[in-house]
Every structure is written in structure tokens, then in C-alpha cells.
Image (cartoon, rainbow over all chains, first blue to last red):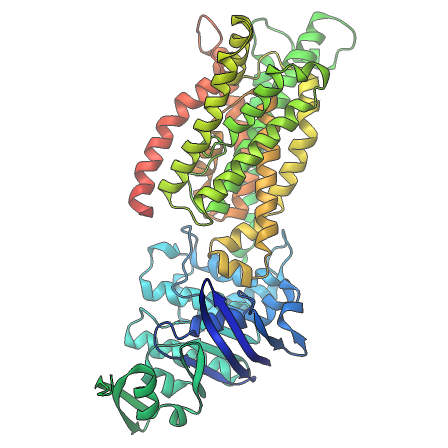
Length: 258
Length: 332
């Protein structure tokens, strides 16, 4: 679906991405992990077209990302920003319906397909019962799910989410991760930036471990989550156990080499 | 879930506002020092009724509709762009900068040679102010930055206007500038209306077409971009639309403040706080409020006629203070 080759990005005097290659296929859920400042968010922003790399190419389908018209790109790729929020106290269903904007003309009212997409996205994220509530009056977890519903309502082939479970309680974290995995398995492509290594190992089909603007390791969770990789990138000594639900990653302390 | 369709839901509100505007327009035509039948509007010839109705009161009502409507609309659009309920053409310095442009044209006597220079200079003034505000306050300004940037732009424009008054060749022309600055719809002609109308229509079109983008902007600039909006173009439309409407309005009526602050604030709960739905409602609401204020200045018994801009400021400033106190709690 999407391929990035040799991506370089500068921000001010810093080179934040130094030759990143990335490939995403339909049905995949890729977790971008790595320490703070590793370039995860920068890569995600490049992949959705928010930043233009100074070198390298990103191709979506058979066209370069830069050549996609904005509207067409918006219906192919949905983006969920980190700690996304709504600035006005609008009703939940109105916010979710904003996800349909790429499909509507300036003054066009939502059609039956739009209404159905909004309804489905609210049901999937468990916010349907809040639909008439003002989003600004909801708890942090509820607001996060409303924003996720908004990005699902786009009905795009690819969903790119920046820390969608930050600030959620464990129950809602699992709910969101299962939802995203189900979304990928239903034939969509999902890329998420994550800090929780156990959630990443358990739910993502592939992991990309980043460090200092480069890809440090890439592959299945078992291939990437090794004590050696985690010590090299995070500087932690981690215990990695195989559990019936997947890998369990327990950071036990700082690695001695640090 | 038919409630997602805004056309039907807002229909009743827009109809009510439209009716209010129609009633106030008729009242405004009827109010004046002498009682004149409304039929004067349709009389032909040089009878006093026809002249007063067609050349004094009709332009007054038409200008109230144009200026009030566009001030309400521009306020709603600016608040949507900056995602801040305190943004208003007057408070961000657009009105005073437009006034500066107009004062310079009046001061140097360019208006007598080339009347179109008046709205053009005012529009350029407003454009500079909104552009400067954007540079000073950034793309996502907090309440304080917005107000401070507005103060800076307004003071700059105000000081140059003061200079013009200070340097005016005689007390009469100084008084003329001062009175004009206070803002009024009195003694305006159809020529003023015709001068402002094309700019008003163009500006209104630019602002109204930005509704969907304003909705997207409620989610922040990044998300709006990934929803397919070209924010550079959106900003240009909104800044140019505000400058065209506010500039041409100030050029013919002087500075009339607070309409763009009060109207969107009052109507926002009725449209579910959605910026796009607020635009047409604020257009009609602005018309109604300015008509009502203009009727007010003629009915309030004062020795000299109370200026419209003075009345809107007297009512609007306390309203603004209350709003600052309220938003300070929410937005800090």
C-alpha cells in the first residue's frame, strides 16, 4: 500500500530522520516504537503527508505521496494526532462526522453512507451512548475514543495513529488495541506510535524499532523484542517472557552498559 | 441520525433571524424625526417623502444590513480560524487599521478626486492588521497573545490617526475625522452603499465558502490538513474576506465595534458550537443587532444624536470583559 525509501528529514539544525525505509501492506498493523526523540512521530508525519522529507520518496499505491491531490489523499489515509482534542464544545456525533469531510462538498449534508460510517465508528469505539454529549465535558479516555471514532469514520484504507492509547486506563487500552487489530485484520493498514512495549508486542503484526532517526530493528514482535535490542536502544535490562496472549516485556532496570 | 444534517436543523433558526431582520428593517425605515409613510419608498418624483425615504432612510437600512451582517460573519470566521471566542475585527485591530487607511485618504484629499480610494485604502489597512496579527500571535494564539497583539496593532493605527488629527489644517477637519471615526450610519447615501457593496459581496463569499475548513480546524491544524484542506488557501480566504468586509464597512460607516464579538457568542449554543453553521446565523444576527442599535441611537433621547459606534462600544465592552473572565477560566 505504502512504501518509503531513504527518508531524510531536518528540523532546524537537527536531522531527525536519517535514511529510513518503511513498507506497509494492507492487513498489517505496524507498531513504531523507540525512545523519546527517536523519530517515530516525525516518520508518521512524513507518511501522512504532514511533512515533506528533504530526501527520499514516499509512494502511496503507484503514485508519489506528493502528487496525490489533498482531497483524494484524505480519503485514503486517516491520521489521529497525539492528544487530539476539539476546540469547541461540540456534540460527540458532530465531531465523529468531521471524519466524513473529505467525502463532502462545502455545503453538502451527510448522505446515508456518511451517517452509516459515523454510526459504525461510534459503535466500534463504544461512544454511541455519548453521541449527544459535549466532547469537552467528557473524561480523557472518552475523548480519546471519540477522536479514534473520528479517524475511523473517514473510512480510509490506512489509519496512522500517534499514541492512541496514551492516557487511557488498561481496560480501554486493550479495547482500543483490539479494535485497531480488528481494523487491520478486516483488510485495512494500521500504523501506530506506541510506548507500551507489551501492548506493541501483543497486538502489532510487525514492529519497527527506531533509534536516533534510523530503523534499529524491524520484524515480528519476537524478532524485535530481544534483550539485546532493548538494551541497545532504550538502555534497559528487560525480561521478555512468552505468555499465552503473546510476549510480556518487563523492564527490570537500566542496562549496566549505561 | 438525521440530526447530522445541519440544513434542516438550522432552518428554523435562520428563518427566525431572517424574520427579525425584516421586522427591524421596516422599523428602521419608519423611525426618524418626521413621520413618513413607508409608501415613500415606492413614490417616484421629487416629493419630500420619496427623497427622505429613498435617499436617507433606505441607504441607512441597506448599510446596516451590509455592515452588521459582515461584521457578525467576520467575527464568527475569525473566531473559527483562531479557535478563540475573543477574536473580533475591532479587537484584533482590523477596524482601527482600516480606519487609518480611510483617514489617510480623507486627510490628503484623495477621496474627492478618486472616491474608490476610500474603501481600497481601508481594505488594505484591515489586510495589514489581520496579516500582522497572524505574524505576531502565531497560528494557535492563546487569549493573552491575541489580546496583546490586538492592542499593539490598534495602538499603532490609533497613534497614526492621532497624528493626522493633530496635524489637520483646521479644527473643522479635525472634528470631521473624529466624528467620522465614532461610527455612524447617519447621512449616508446610496453612493456609499454602492461603493461598499462589491467588496462586501466578495468578502462574504470568501468567508462563507470557508465553513467546512473551519469545522475541520476545530480538530487542530494538522488534522485539518489530513482531512484534505489546504490551510494556506483557507487562511488567505479568511484573512482576505475579513479585510474586504471590515475594510469596506469602516470606509463608509467608520469603526463600529463589538458586533463581531457579541453576535457569534450569543448564537453559538443554537448551532451546537459548530463553526460552519455559525457563519450564516452570525450574518443574519449581525444585521439584526446593528439595525436594532441604529434604531436605538435614534430613539434614545440625547441632545445630539448618539453615534452608533459609541453605543455598540458602551454595550459591547462590558460584554467583552465578562467574556474574558469566563474564558480565562476555561482556556488557561
